[in-house]
Length: 164
Image 1: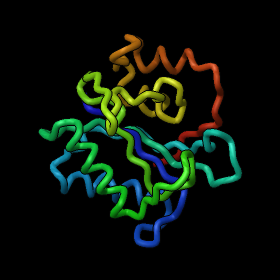
Image 2: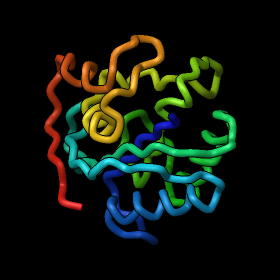
Image 3: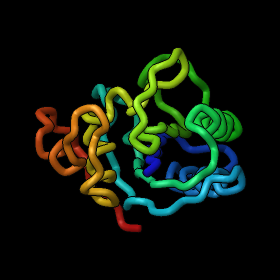
């Protein structure tokens, strides 16, 4: 299973509100040899760490692709750039954020790619949509399912499911 996280909290000049940008980003991935198998519902989440920036819209998708993990990451980052993502400071507001969460259970640590995503097990905005589409998915290092990781979170983040 290949899993990605999607998020954004700024409007895009070309695509509009965050939801429209995220939908367009999924379509852009499809044109790059990435097939979207499933997508969670949409969630509205407060920024982490708490700040006065706009709340995010988030989802998780499962993918199929023949691309190896580093190439998939490069495609995702290319989509972010084309959609106006500007990398400034960490946790800054952004038009589009695509995170490679897991790539077929592989454990990778290089200068440009760490898998599984190093903070996914701490993030309710990832685990809630992940548990929706793949509740039995197991963290490659911790061995816990998405549901178990979600149940074990100690930090509460404000999160609400949005209508599709």
